[in-house]
Length: 92
Image (tube, rainbow, N blue to C red; front, side, top):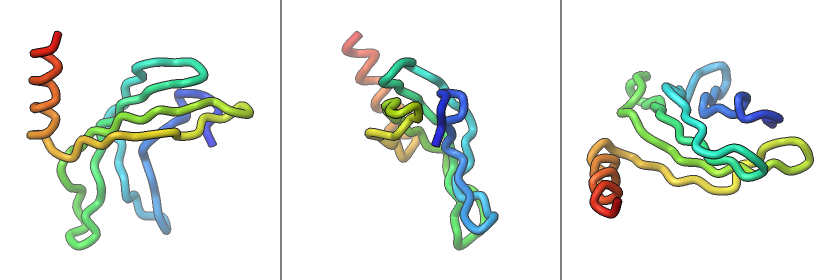
């Protein structure tokens, strides 16, 4: 469990093998409720190679001194990411 925003990561290992590799992290909001956007890749277990880059936006709530994930939204492809950016730009 992470006690600080800096400790929160998408990196994940299973049996000593890295399954999720965090490429970048941006903290969007800090506080009791924090929002972090991650740029990451997942391991393709068949090929042993990391797959396409993805984005995850996650909300964390600090309770009893530790951050716990409350929700997440994953953007699974570059196409979807570009569509989201296009719509946001249109709205703003």
